[in-house]
Length: 252
Image (cartoon, rainbow, N blue to C red; front, side, top):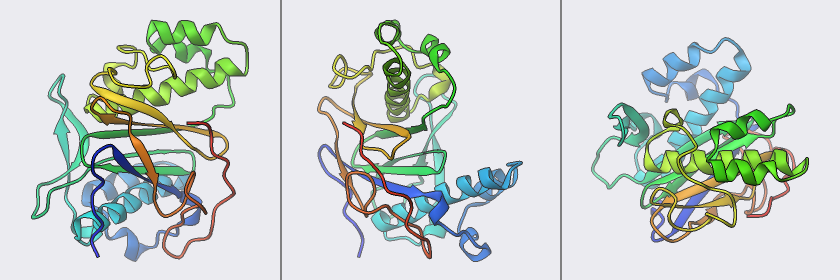
């Protein structure tokens, strides 16, 4: 049965652990040629596996909403609204209205967000090194807020602003190439409407990760965990996979 695309402010959030998915040749055949070519370009097998799993899971999730077999889905790139270059991934037009979606992966975690209007999602694995230099890429107000905090709060604040800003850029279709510093996104000061036409909020995430989702419009998104994962029960697995490690949700 085809799954209904979320309506209103709802966003379906699907989490996957790449370590729980076995991607054999028969499964990988469901990827598009561009995806297979890009996967082969990775130098390290672990990076190749993570990329393959992310795109396999994206296709499986979208198949649920479109009723089309994963391997038949045609992915395209919408033009960037600022420069016209190839921007965010979209589904090529088909018989059914295409849902809006966003894909992100970092470390072993993958998120696919699906909504009825433009959506963006980002996840980042916590860096072991100092991230203070990354504050230079943020909006000056966000950088000043983070600079006033003591460690380890400053470290988490910078990554928090980073994932929130990336989620907004993915939602608008601009991408990180146009910079993260054009708008403030720090929690509490800009968690509602007015962030480049989007509303952004934190997502519960596994220990060691931070994540955020942005939705076009004035009202904050209402994340709905699907199939388990942070905030929604046991961790999700891929076909023939095992359960991943336990997860502790972060404050949204």
